[in-house]
Length: 154
Image 1 (tube, one colour):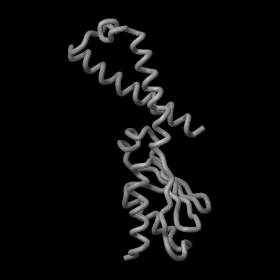
Image 2 (cartoon, rainbow, N blue to C red):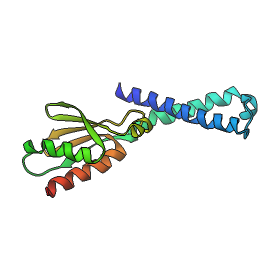
Image 3 (cartoon, one colour):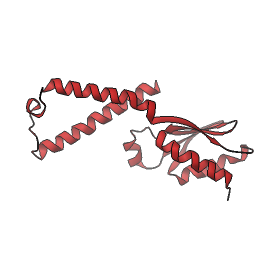
Image 4 (cartoon, rainbow, N blue to C red):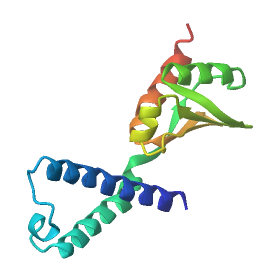
């Protein structure tokens, strides 16, 4: 279900973004406001473009989200506060906590808007360290930061 919600969000996001670009172009008189002049086949072209956007939005969540293990040696019980501190240093705040799992959200409203409110990072305690799940680019930044922090505790 989460996958479908993400795909729909990205479809709407892409459509709104392209609509804003087209609106600016119409207001600047770079293109005609008539759809039949703006696009070669008029509304048929709009439907084809929307279909392409739907395809992109359907595929993006496959590559845009990932789950990685941050390998941490030693006892994990005393690292709870250090994980929160590390995430706060990277611009996240603790949203919720559920036993072995902590969920963080971005503190920046602008980041949340640009990420279509899909800025949630989940850190779960596992046998070999912490499993980090979220946007690929965020996970790629957070996992090395956690590993470095717990290998070099000062």
